[in-house]
Length: 114
Image (spheres, rainbow, N blue to C red):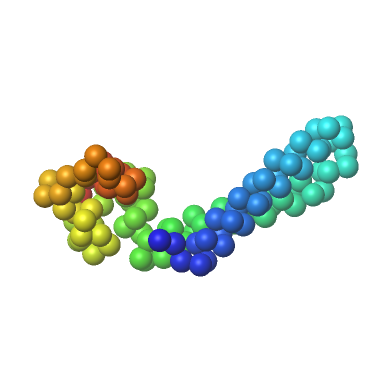
């Protein structure tokens, strides 16, 4: 579902946030002295990774319609048709998710195509 760069970014952000939490706890435990440098570095790395993620969502023309869907909960019919015919069929009521539906089916049933 995700390309290798997206997976790498997700793992890097997970590691950066875990490091921020760990070094933050260490900084508090040490009275704010010993781990302040590593904590600040981890915060900067996490901010750069999150900033890169947001930048790609805004700048990349392929993801721009998806950004509107994430923020507003609406996508254009042409985008829904191009990226997932099943999504459009669910929205138009042609296909109803069954009781054993996947998470994607359940989420798709809440998306509104305009």
